[in-house]
Image (tube, rainbow, N blue to C red; front, side, top):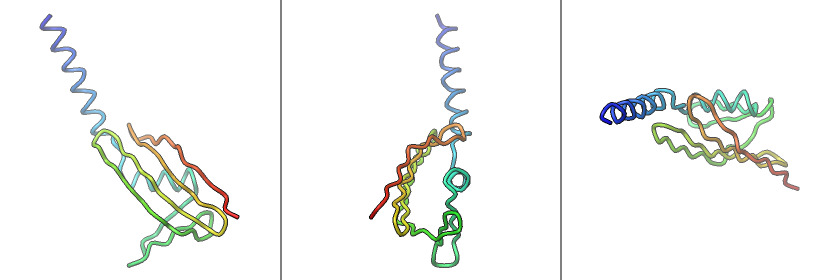
Length: 105
């Protein structure tokens, strides 16, 4: 019985360490955003300029939640006729996307 408890605790502890070591960060999110949605942002002094496929988009809001074992982000952008609501959860250096793009008339 004691061996089973030790093995279980070791397995849970090992899993927690793996999750902590592979939790993505803001830099990983920016790379993912660039490759998945073609949105690139550059900090030019006081302003952050964002472009989607060469066209400038307005950055509206950005919210991160880093819980140590996962990374959640909600990010908003807008251009002349679209609103981009980027939402993703990152775990094990991978992002799961549940974003939405709305067309505005």
